[in-house]
Image (cartoon, rainbow, N blue to C red; front, side):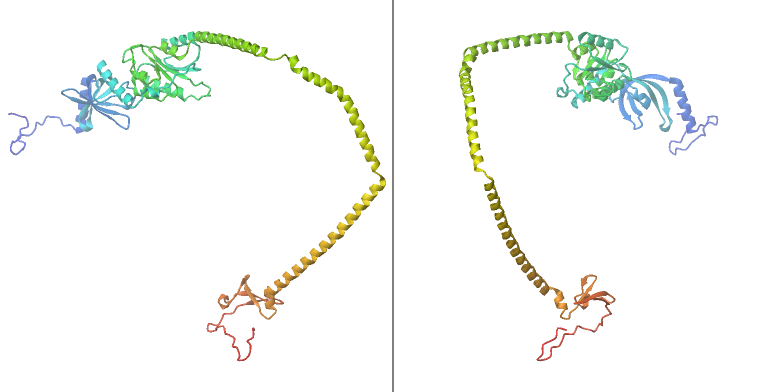
Length: 482
């Protein structure tokens, strides 16, 4: 077997030198040349394959592999492109990517810089939709017990839709025909890469409006869009939109597409309408029907009230026939009144005459002499009471004085001053009693209290050998206290 650079099979040594006319490259130069060659030869390409590995970096860039049954190629989606993708890459999803073929010199491999990513046909979209539906259903977002009832007659209706399409005109026209309400439109794009982000932001924005703010907060939200293909309606299958609808505190009606078009928003919404016009019909009742119903109820109330009044009047007349006439009820009382009125004049005159006689009898008994005698008796009684009070007070004062003198004698006998008068002295330092040598410190200022006054003194250093001497008691003689 011939070769330009033959090697020895046993030793591995080069048998012939390489040709001298081959150009010499650095690693970077060779990598750059390969990069230019690859990009010039292919440029933008469309590649179909199955996603086998997805790695979303913390920087926001996404790295993935595309494979078929015989090869694998790496792909990179930069953050700016990844954020605007309508369908996010998932492992196992068959897609068609459009991008630029280039190399990554650091690892000596080629890759595709993805600009667009779309499912490879309706089957791939339906498989992705079913997987997402199962995931959200497992979280309980589609449960019936979390759905909120719609208000009977909302004051304000918020509509999340395109402001330029026929959908908003159909809704406004239907509301005007049934029951005109205040409508607040949140404009969004209902198709394309930004559809899901704007619809989710619209639902959250209407919920964030304050209750008494300058912009009225809606009592009901309608998310509406006309019909279209599954690709056109894909923004309403986005997980962001579904979670925003599930988190809405305001009841929400989904009106996306036609009767046969179903999106994940329909499952999480509090109610699903087959068309935007049907959503308007479910949002408000028919005003004319309400007026007719109110009028009918009013007529029924009037009829029932009249029937009730007639029945009560008949019962009242029946009860009235069993009662006596008013003249008969008051006839006896009227007769008693007339009799008492005739006797009242004579009774008043008799009573006045009786009281006049009693007054004259009492006046005759009263005289000036009797009054004077009564005053003298009262004065004598007052003088006796004064003399008795003086005697009681004098006795009480004498008793209190004896008690005070006895207490004073007892206090004098118990006071330390009686001891001082016998020749003793009281030694204190800083108002504390010095009771012995142990409490005296050299240089301490002390006060000595005698029976006739106080003097100050200072403690000298005591003799270490000195001991307090016990007074010796001479035999046959009593010891002296001093």
